[in-house]
Image 1 (spheres, rainbow, N blue to C red):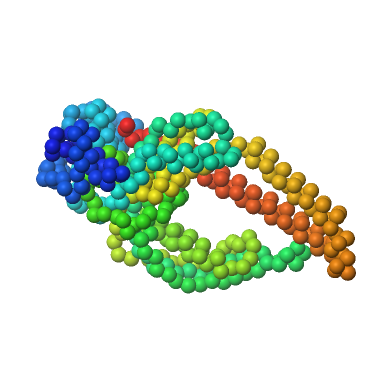
Image 2 (image 1 turned 135 degrees about the vertical axis):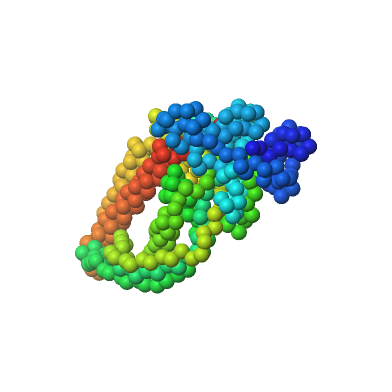
Length: 401
């Protein structure tokens, strides 16, 4: 069912730039709290019926497909088991499956979109054009496939404690040795957002953060008009596991900052996490922009509140490695200059032969630069793998539009 304009009967959609519902027919605007909700209460019993049941066959490929009748044109709208809002592909009206936001299932809060579609595309364009290693062909790609999706989240509070043994390298050169460090403590986390959709990779959705959760509003289904959205499909056990993993990561990251060493790793730890109270079920906004490049899918995410861009774009490896090699050659040339022309001057003032130490320092610097380059390469490849995930592409493409 679409929320209709009380002036002309046109379908209303939520406009982030206005922070109001907007009628494209007459231009009227309404606050989400100003719309009459009396009709919605009557429509909560209008349910989406399984496609196999509607057409009288048993096809495994349609196991999570349901038919919902558009109240505007009577067209059959196909929705998955978890979709709450979508569009009618026949008349274009935004559609909200009210039976899925009934009082026993409805979210507690929602963070409305404040970033418009145009702003999201512009942010992605700026990222693409600012990439030194991005091929020119990527910079010419037209970004047409974009969908605004409300992702279901559980906002949790947790008590967490841990006892960690870190190991790392201390000292320089031949004096480098392996050292161990112990850290222990407890902390209290509040307002940790956990992605409540099993269809979306948690590592990807967590990169959308931070969200300003103080701006959340009491849930009203009218905020969904004009966007896609899902219900949560995680269990309590899933929530507990996700909370434990997230708290452990945050605790380790904080504790690691107090360790003075190189190549720090966790040798052993004993984490314990307790989720306090009932999680807050909220919907948080994100723009999904999809395209294909060299027959591989790519999905870029944009935080629908802050405009933060989450992606790793295809890049020119030959250019990257050419730059690394040229940098190494530049370091080697500078090192040769120092050793050949400045060594005598250093020895004249120091009255001792420190050439070995100087050489070690130069080599250490060069190796350090190489390690930083390798770490950056691995980080980019990890993010690119998320961007090229076929699962994420399917999560978006299954939305009608």
